[in-house]
Image (cartoon, rainbow, N blue to C red; front, side, top):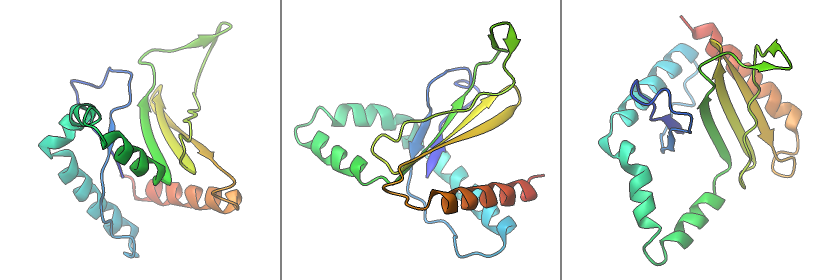
Length: 158
């Protein structure tokens, strides 16, 4: 699961601040409110781990060790889904004199069958989905499932 490393100190930075962590989520839990509460707790615990802030540096050092690049490349090839969150510009943008009211993110698949990118801009968020039809033969079913999942989250929002 992608975990945001963004904090008040880094919120203005325009680069991706996400690390992937392995969480064993309560997917069989029928109650969406309870499922989201448990996932929120798990994500909070993962974000509090001191090593999370150092993963980029550790990975940077690791790739200099002979053989580690090969292992990392094999790990990346096994990723089916890439999820990302990107902060939009902190000011209004204009195109040909017209103010842009939304931006649709487009994240590259990068070898994964699915890339889902969330972009915040002007007090709202937009989600861009890029999928490989060879990996996801029935893209309409996946789209319906994503929409249902977003609706479920919105129903539980305070």
